[in-house]
Amino acid sequence: MSRVLRSFREMLGLLSRGDFSRKLDEEMTAAIDALEAMPGDKGKAVMTVSITFNYELGRIDIDPAVKVKLPDTARFMKTPFWTIDGALSVEHPNQINMFAPAAVNRHERDDDEIATG
Image (cartoon, rainbow, N blue to C red):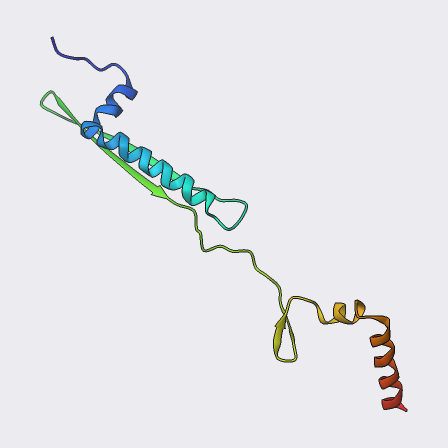
């Protein structure tokens, strides 16, 4: 008596002698790993499974395929920098003076008064 398959899950497990199901597991793991390794807080991976049924002379050949699009891991958050004295700084130039000690600010005012005379 021949074995009759009535479920898609059962047929899926038999494709390529189980190799296709194992490939799906590997691709799913790769997608999850890529999402967890992303530098940002959001991302998306797409796994597309296609099953093609080819019928000829009473026989059906099933051709499975899987395509995976992993998240773009090149996306990093941008970081603002300002130039100060030909170098990069993460502090806005106006904020540097705002948080400087009062004595330094007073000294700068004295220098300005002397210069403007």
